[in-house]
Length: 409
Image 1: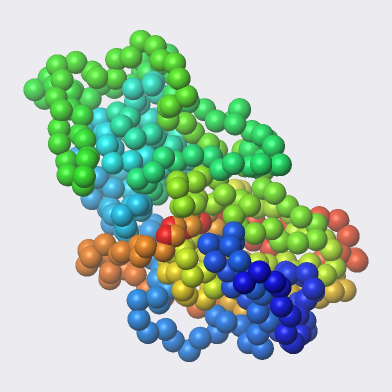
Image 2: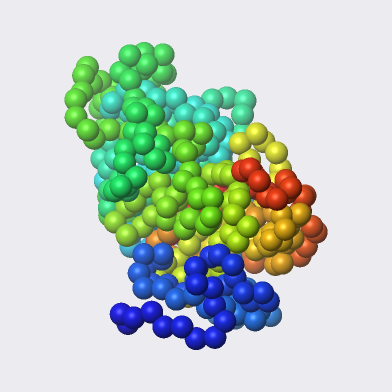
């Protein structure tokens, strides 16, 4: 298909001035990058009666999930889902790793929902805290030392292909963040970290390769580098340092907020941002028929701790081929208020990944299956607070949340 065709009632500009009484749906290939059409429906495409079969959306509250590493220091994170290219797990580690861990299968990304501690590795030591990413390259020896007296919840993403920062093209070097805000471990911060030798006086490096575990033992601490140079090292990114792209007249597509890329898999951080001020702008993304990606979305909560929108940790899984979309908010053209026409009255703020759709298989653990359920129905359609007269000035989004969104083929 090489020409743009038009049938029936449409908007000349997608995501803007949607015809009265219609609901816009984005039908696209390759997420938001391939060929696309906008469909203007008489009904919301997410108003289904039921969904039978494997593409049924699922939800699980990760904060309530029991993990083995919460009580067993030797345990690994609890695996939730996987395919040949990506694994998604959750960790509630409360005690220091009694070994160094080396992932010989791929890169590792950690996102701390709550808790704090120190990453100790070949390259030195690096503190981490809530709403911070740690990216650990394949083959790195590392340990996590959680701080005592706080609850810990960490999301773990492991990828076969390297985790990289997406190319930004004309956006330049400073959006959505300057690489100068990335922090790497420091050798001079390693001195205060407790040793990890076992009762036999050995230091263990636990290696995963091909899905199997091996152990290498040393008579000395293997993290004994006295210097390093290069461009391959773990690094930290604080969500507070992300400056989301915005438009006064249009809601920018989710891929604009991509934070990391691993081959054709995307990790997207959607942070709080000003509301569009143009009278004809749609204040929420259209419904989406994403046929090439499975999507995993995790609300992270508001930076100031307020409880708005879905609770932090309520992970949603939307298989490729399923209709989905953010909460639809329709602000009257007069700028006197807004209302929710479908779903919750406040849109979820996602932090997640897009993965092209080789099915992300659910781990067959009975505990995970017992916890999985449809995302809760939220039929709240109460009016939102009034906008400033005439819609002037930037408005903050009704839901000042962060959310993680992951997409994978």
